[in-house]
Length: 83
Image (cartoon, rainbow, N blue to C red; front, side):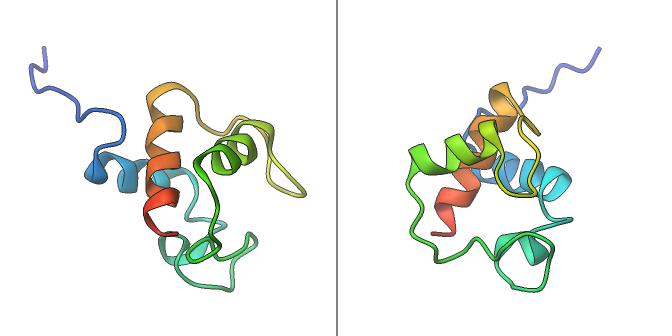
């Protein structure tokens, strides 16, 4: 069995990896550039609560519940880091 500990939720490396795997397809260049189906996320000034609500509930063309649990915490931490 793999005995390596997973990075804790909110860990910068894990956060970027989860974002890349689940969000970059619509939010270009890890959310830092315009041109994707979804908006550029960097510099929007979103709060932690706003980010969480959007990821959980979805919005406009974004489906709800793309990630949950630690992955949700990591995505929120990543998006918050590029605000």
